[in-house]
Each structure stands twice: as C-alpha cells, then as structure tokens.
Image (tube, rainbow, N blue to C red):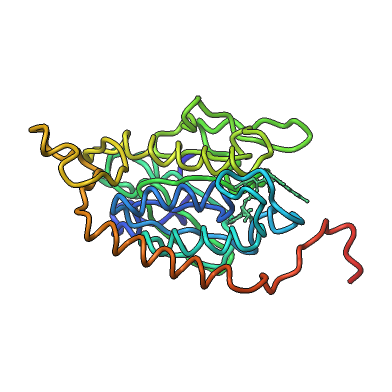
Length: 268
Ligand SMILES: Cc1cc2nc3c(=O)[nH]c(=O)nc-3n(C[C@H](O)[C@H](O)[C@H](O)COP(=O)(O)OP(=O)(O)OC[C@H]3O[C@@H](n4cnc5c(N)ncnc54)[C@H](O)[C@@H]3O)c2cc1C
C-alpha cells in the first residue's frame, strides 16, 4: 500500500526512529533494545497486555517461585522508560507507507527516513523510520499494506521471516502476532530478537547489547564493539546497589491490581 492523499507529507520531519505498536511483553522488550541503542522509540498501547489476566506467572525465566504478572509488566514498562523509550496511551488505527508513489511525494524516495506514518485514535500522526507491530492478534491497522501478509487462522497473524521481518522494509512483527507460541517468555524473547534484527538492518553499527567487566575486550587489544559497554568494579557495585534497592522497593508489597479476566466473564 502507499499512503493516501492524507498521508503525512513525505518531507515532514521524522518524529521517531521506532514506533512500537503494542506494549505487551513483546513490544516492551523490543523497545528496551531499540531505546538502549539510542533509537528514539515510542510505544503506543491503549490498555495493556493480555498477560494482565494471568493469576500467577510461574514459567517466566528468573522467578523460581513465580511472579505477579502485573508486577512483571510494570517492571518491563519501567525498564523500557529507563532505557529512554516513551509510552503513550492510544490505539493505532492505521500504518501507511509514505513512499515515492505517494501523491505529493516530490523528490522523496522510499529510502528516505520516516517512511511510515502511524495514526492513532487520539488523532496523533507520527512519522517514523521503523514500525514494530506487537499487537497479538489485532491487525486492522496493517490491512492493505502491499507486502504485509496477514494470515487468518481463526485469529489473525502477520507473516514474517524467522527474524520478524515482514515483506516491507522497516516494518516488523513481534511476539504472538508473528505466530510465536502463546507464552510470555517466548514473546518477550522474540520482541528482543526483532529489535536486534532492526538494529542489524539499520545503517548504524551494532554488535551485541552487552555489559562486560572492564578490560574484557580492551585488555585483549580489541576495541569495545558497538552496543557493548565495559564497566569498572566500582560502577558494577553502584549498579548492583541500585538494582537491589529498586527491587526491594518494587517487591515490598503485593501488587494493588487484581488479575483481569476474559471479557465474556465480566459482570459489568
Ligand atoms: C488467562 C491467561 C493466563 C496466561 N498465563 C500465562 C502463563 O502463565 N505463562 C505464559 O508464558 N503465558 C501466559 N499467558 C499468555 C501470555 O499472556 C501471552 O502469550 C503474551 O502476553 C503474548 O505477548 P504479546 O506481546 O505478543 O501480546 P500481549 O502481551 O497481549 O500484548 C499485545 C498488546 O498490544 C496492544 N494492542 C492491541 N491492539 C493495538 C493497537 N491497535 N494499537 C496499539 N496497541 C494495541 C494490547 O493492548 C496489548 O498490550 C496467559 C494468557 C492468559 C489470557
């Protein structure tokens, strides 16, 4: 698809590097990685992950006796924000490819930055270089885009390659939406994988997102690879102290929110 007459002007300034549509486990995990790599990242979500319905999450790595799923989502949201991502409460209603075939495209080419226009139900319209779709089974905002395959299997999914790429450069799908198993850990991991794929596809240099002890690379005469960081022991201790304090505080009390349930079971 190309953008319609009302598409954001192709020469409009780019608002974001990455718009993540859907702030569940896959979308938030993707945002952590793109934001940590200094891509200006916005997560758009109206009401939160289906994981909010979980009663007690017992198979997410790192929690030997389980964790409150609402707590995990809060922590993941906080982690994305700490990484530099912004979050906004809205539903995306349309994604357009604003390319050279767009009316009034002028001299712009598809290779120009900001080739997508994302419209949300709050009236906002955002130009972005990349889109990561992570909306579980909601695909209405992707309908009609040439190159995006939608798979109807009772629920709708997006056809991707093994790294989450759709048929449109710069447009990715992550998590359950990309037909990953209906498990939080798998979808979180896939969100991270898709973000790393995006970073590798981007022109910027990227190796791994690693924090390594001081000297790990440099003492072997190797430059610190892009995306990696070496930290001294004092800095490691400072970060650990902050982490301990933060987690003690976050896990000090039961989560205030009740689990949600299936909409068909609600009494209201
Ligand atoms: C009752 C229940 C219990 C579960 N228990 C477990 C468990 O114990 N262990 C486990 O591993 N998994 C469990 N799951 C499954 C797990 O919740 C999902 O597999 C996982 O959340 C999928 O991640 P996702 O990011 O792909 O989708 P989600 O986490 O659902 O995120 C999708 C997000 O997209 C947003 N969105 C949708 N449409 C739009 C739009 N147009 N614009 C913007 N945002 C949009 C939604 O608001 C949502 O936040 C459970 C699920 C349920 C229902």
